[in-house]
Length: 145
Image 1 (cartoon, helix red, strand yellow):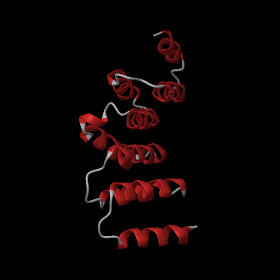
Image 2: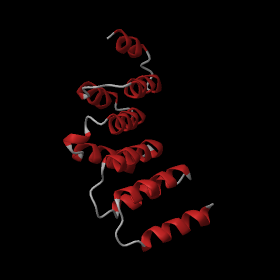
Image 3: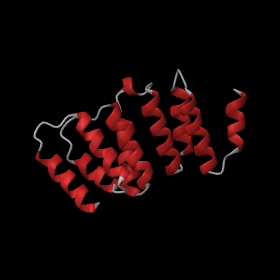
Image 4: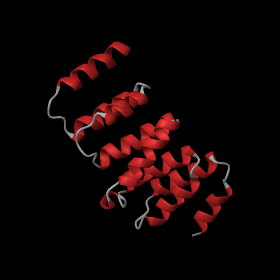
C-alpha cells in the first residue's frame, strides 16, 4: 500500500500542468489511505488557487488530522475562502465539520448562520459537532427553529 502511495505521488509530481481536479483526486486518495499529512504537504506546493472541491477536501484532511498544523491551515483556508464559495453547501459542511472537530463551536455556528439555503447535511454537521463537543442540548434548539 505504501508503495502504491509512493508511485501515485511520483506520477503526480511528474505532471507539469496540474488541474484542481487532479489535486482533489490526489487529496482524496491520500486521505483514504490514512496519510492526510501528505495532503497538507501537497497543498503547500500547490501552484494554483484551490477551488471549492479542493477546499472541501482540504477541510476534510484538516478535520482528520486535527493537529496544530491542520488547525492553522484549515483556519487560514477558511479566512481566505472566496465569498462565492461560502454559500456552497458542500464546502460549508466540510468547514463546519472541521471546526467542530477542532472544538471551535462558535466559528462553526457563525458559518451555519451565514448560509442562506441550508440542507440536511449542514444541519447534520452542526448536530454531529454539538454531540462531539458535549453540547447535545443545542440540537434541540436547532430543530425547534
